[in-house]
Structure formats: structure tokens, C-alpha cells
Length: 255
Image 1 (cartoon, rainbow, N blue to C red):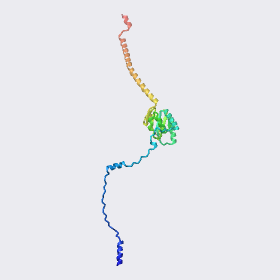
Image 2: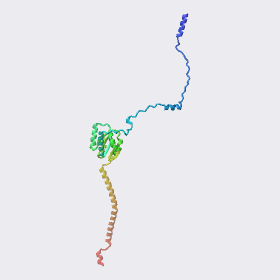
Image 3: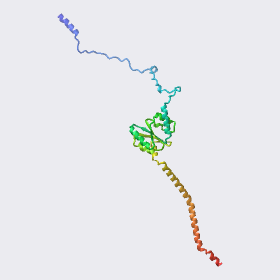
């Protein structure tokens, strides 16, 4: 019994229940949210770390007067001189937007334009911009924003140019300068509808001659009418005088 009693004590010490219920009390909340004091907010704002700004790249900095100007490339100077000569001897300068076009179509376009004495010029914007800025065509500068081509001609061939460009949708007309006048696309189309110079001169001469002939007829109408009235009056006097007065020979014999 002593052994059993001792074993039972060891068995009670080793056995634990599978489910234990423990009671835990809730913790008391001792800290509540409180707005930060204004002085502390100011202190934190003043002591806040501000990371340094990234350095400005040298290409974005303004150029100082002490820096030497870049020397102009000789090839660019030659191209600029050619552009000046091309613009100087042209009465019509048209600016077009050039989209992707095969080389064969470009050659065909050159051929049809050259039939009307219109030349297609590929000039870089870096070359043509300084030339236009120093000429009378500076108003065309806003049109050079992408890949452009110039259509130049020593004559005003707007009608022929529009007829050729109608079959090439990849070349879009943006504006032109014809005889020193800056025109938009609509202005070029209106200019193309005008008659030729010879026809306009003939119409002007006909209108002026019509006005002068009308003025001359109005001025001559009064004297002509007066002359006709006087002639009719003289004729009537002669007719009435011959019937009432006797012949001169017969009247002398009676006396």
C-alpha cells in the first residue's frame, strides 16, 4: 500500500489536464492620444532634414560671357549659303511636312514638280532656321517643327504645285510665301483659283475702257442732242420761209 501510495502520488504529479481554464484580467489604458504642442511642431519643422537638391547638369546652365562661342562647321556654312541663294531667287517658297515616302516616289515627285519649274529641297531645320530669321520670311519659322521640305520656284506656280501634291498625301502643304506675301494653306488654294496675270490685266483694261467710254458718251450726249435740235430748228425755218416769201426776182419786177 505504501508502494501504491507512493506511485499514486507520482502519477498525480505527472498528470495534467488536457484543457486548462485561465482567467486573465484586462489591462488598463493609461495613455490616450493627445495633440502635439504647437511649439514642438515648430521645433520639429525647423529641425527636419532636407536632402540636398541634385546638381544642375552643365548643359542646362546659362552660358557665361567668358565662354568661347562654338566655331561654325564649314559644311554647315556652305549649306546655309546655298539656302540663302535658293530663297533669294524664288518668287514662291512653300513649306511642306514630309512623311515617310519611298525613294522611287520621291524621284517621281521631283520629276513632276520639275516639269513646272518647281524644285524640291531637303534642308535641315538647323540650317534653314538661321537663314529665315534674318530674311523677310521669318514669319514661316513656326512651321519648321518636324521634318520639312521646301518647294521653291522662280515663278508663282501655286496651281500646278497643288495639282501635283494632290496625288502625294505624304507631303502636306503647311504654308507659303508668294511674291512677298505670307499665305496659309487656304490662302494658297484661294490664290490658285485666281486667273492668270494676263487675263487679269485684260479684265482690268476692259473695265477701265468701259468706264471711260461710258463717261465719254455721257459727256457727248448733251452737245449732240443740242446740235440735233438746232439742225431740226434750222430745217423747219427754211421750210416755212420758202413757202411764205416770194422769190426775189419776181418781187423786183413789180416795183
